[in-house]
Image (cartoon, rainbow over all chains, first blue to last red; front, side):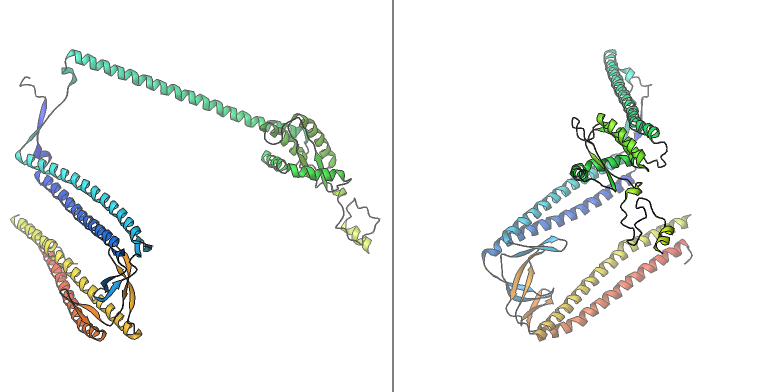
Length: 364
Length: 145
């Protein structure tokens, strides 16, 4: 290489890492190491205590009692003895104690010892790491102090010979192409998904329209004079109610029909045996909606009749084997006049509501 | 300029004295006083306990002994009339109840005196720290609050 060409630059190490700073870093790391060592010592002491206690606990039940000095407060004790040598209270933590036998206690202590060992191992690893760090810092510091120089040179690809260059470039191309293909694949997949999503979205809208449209249109056709415009949701819940209570209702209705007159409630039953049971298939929703639209808010019996007809007609096509109990509030004339007072004159027509004024007059 | 440099050095020396000498001393003194407090409390408890025993005429008792690591076992004391009390330096003397109470009544004022001494020492160290800080303030010519 020609001497005139200067490709790299030399950096004195101590200009990057000043000796004082590195010394400080070493000092700090060493402090941390000392702290960890203290922790380790503490843990080792715990482990030793634990193992000695374990052996003691295992030895104690060998005899029924042991003469000891029983501590009495911190500064005094009595001569006494240990009794019930196979009963130990072990602190589980948080102020909870468990009464265990010597063997069980030994097991607990063994488990504790294991966890202590784990902690000790972990601390040892940490200390090793920190020491390596400190060593690195100190070596850097010494190197910087010795006046070591770091040389950096830019890596230039063109200086490579042809063969290796072409091969490497070829490989690069390959990688490039692969990347492109992958990108294309991903984009294609994304487009596909988007299309699907769009289709699904439009389908859903159409479905919703289908559900709503016929109900509304027929409602308009059949009952133009209706004042109450109730939402389709309500009808759906009505439908659900009826289908749910179907079997019980059917028997009740049978009885009701056998009776000649049921004045307050009008019962409508219809069953189409060849079709599947009610309320499970989604297709019946529109017809049901339409029925209830006509059924529920009717005020005069005439209108309700027509609606029943239409219902019968449509329900031959649709699956609905249920029954409907309709409480027709508009049918005041047929209501039994329970509330009428007993002293009411018999001449007054029960089917016609008597005005209060007339009532008062009659009673007078 | 020369003056500034020497003053800076002086301040640094004072600060080092506070941080490396006075403050550790203070911590040590407080720790020792706490130890004596603890001892005093133990003797007070013992006195109460012995008085309790005397009042109720208890001659035998059962207690739980800590075997270490918070593992306890039952212990029985057949005769409580003789009690061994720590008299310091690792010596224990066998006392009867009245003798023990007498010993405690001697020991308590002594402990109180020790606490008093440590309190004095702590106050002293605190005063020194204050003094040195004041000196630093004067050197830096910061007006007193």
